Length: 377
Image (cartoon, rainbow, N blue to C red; front, side, top):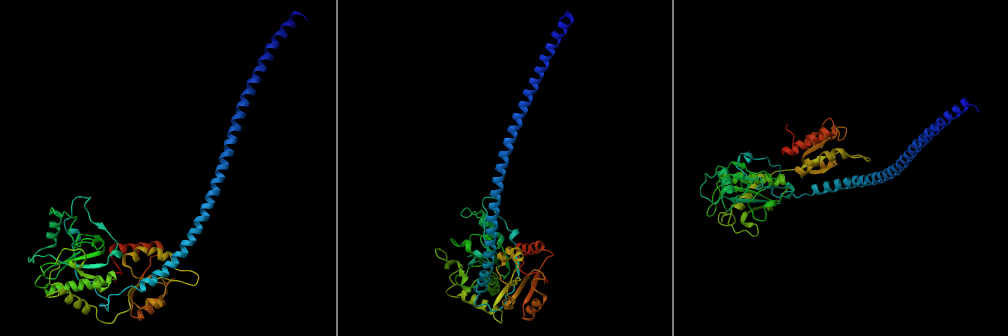
């Protein structure tokens, strides 16, 4: 080998070595990449398995919820039938024979002073909790006493410091009726019976005498209307002193003796309620067929029904026994012919129906919120 060939061979060997080293580096890089991809594939497979388990669990939950929903729908239909029976069998005050109009009541609830302490406020209750109507007197000969004065005393007197006035209604000496608390307010007036009692106070002291005729007339009108609206028997009327555990002569010694103005009050209530009547005051009518019923309309009416507690059902023949009938939904449910039949039976009929079930619910919720049992004519 000559000198030139030896130089060429010497030059080629380092080049081959360099190329081999480069190939080894590339192989190492690809090995790292392969390991990374393999790890990612394993993690993806693990995530896929976990996701599959989650899907199976969700499918099981959906099946359980569907079964529960079917059970609840069946129970709702059964509850509706039971509710209808219960409302139809509700006690109607025996002294009231016809619909009693709402007396003139001046609402001053928001005008009276209240305790400024936000932690010292009256609790709320549902109307269904009310069981009694309690009569009181102010116990003073001063016939000029006002509801505001009673409220200020209840708040500021060290022995009281109440959230506000302790009565729902205040009847002045001239017979004017003032509403001083909402019926849903649990105010203080009969110890241990505040939660289920409406408090009505008359100005004056009735030990040795009875209330003025104007006061008695207003009290009778108010009580007759409350009995009707709250679906209470006449036995629900009681004086403060008649409740157990009371150390009080309120509403005066002549409540049960002497002038015995309780008996006079009950007689006046009976006169207000005389005359022919339907067997029910108010019925809410829903549509029903052999295969379906007004489930959506029923759900839209829950707040209205809870607020006013009417009789509820699906029978036009039962509805025709009511003084007032509320039809929920359009004529595609309860037909116009049924509505005319009810009017012909002497029922006062209102139909509450929006363009959609959502609108119908909004209408009924607003009526419940505003205490408006019937639509304005």
